[in-house]
Length: 221
Image 1 (cartoon, rainbow, N blue to C red):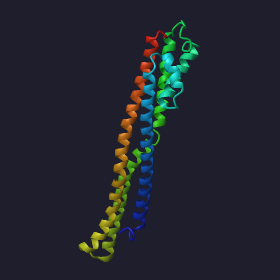
Image 2 (spheres, one colour):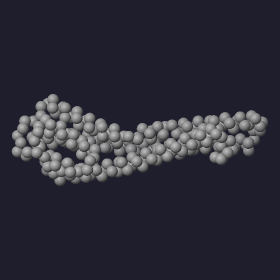
Image 3 (cartoon, rainbow, N blue to C red):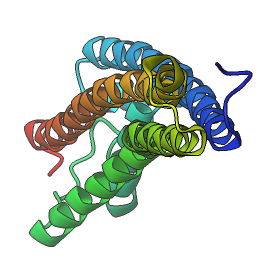
Image 4 (cartoon, helix red, strand yellow):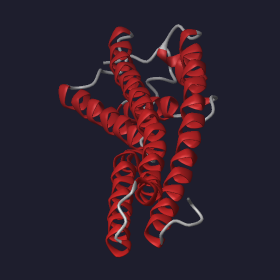
């Protein structure tokens, strides 16, 4: 049926094949990215748990490989250090805490850093959403075109028996099957990755709140 398909059917199937390839590339890429992120989060938390104070964590995190967690941490530390130089390096420092305006500015800096990391991690997900939405419609379009061709053939030959109609209808339905085959993995992967992204964003938000709370607990605010 594929060899004897119409040009329109072959074009639709070719586009769906490209969509399928693109979706699987994105799926494997994002799966590896989230897997690495999970390992980075574990190492980051272990480094935090091994340090009793933020001053010690400041030195420990600086030695970790670059990750979204460490980048958010460094953004907060960098902003605080710019406002209170040497406060984290000198354990006997008695510098005044941050003002309300400075504390609010720190929250905004941490929120901006979180949003940037989320946007980076969300790269590629819109393509899965587009493929999952468009593929069934494209398959349906191919089926409609195929059915139209089948009925035009019936009209031309004047024969409406099942033997004349069935091959054309079966060929037309191939594109619908192909569209669903492409869309189902893409939609499943998209929903899974979005849930992982939301979990990651929640972790970063919780960490930012704990970071400010730790500063307050250690008398740095």
